[in-house]
Length: 201
Ligand code: SF4
Image (cartoon, rainbow, N blue to C red; front, side):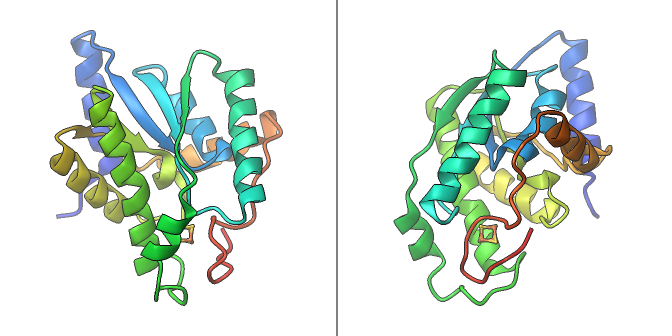
């Protein structure tokens, strides 16, 4: 049976509200535009630390440009959100994507790329004593929420930390991210991140 991740998140949030609990959340961010809506949505219910870990972004100048936009968004709209930058371990990404350069977007290379980023997020969330971890990635219409949630659940079990179910593109989430990007005049990149086969977002 197909899971409805948005419904699962709605139910969880309503339980937390009923119990007057505001958990901590270690939230992986792929970029400022995607995080704009997810922060708008989740910061009402969670104490969020945003984790920018994207060794898949090429070249380094593009990584820095997206990172600067992430900082700007936080300063202008979410100044109470804590921020952590991960390592720019491009060797790790290139090693992981070896022999997968010709894969289409959404294929095996992308699944490995999600594993790399979600695995690191889960590990750090556990080390930091957070209640939950999640990623903004499911907001993209190009990214399969089932695969992302299965990977998140897997690392949640491996590291012993709760994975927050998500499909942020639902409930007009993707549209909202575009509206918020306009509002804050955010740089919206024209490709996903790696340049292995010039995948356009
Ligand atoms: S297309 Fe995007 S998700 Fe896929 S491997 Fe490249 S950077 Fe990662």
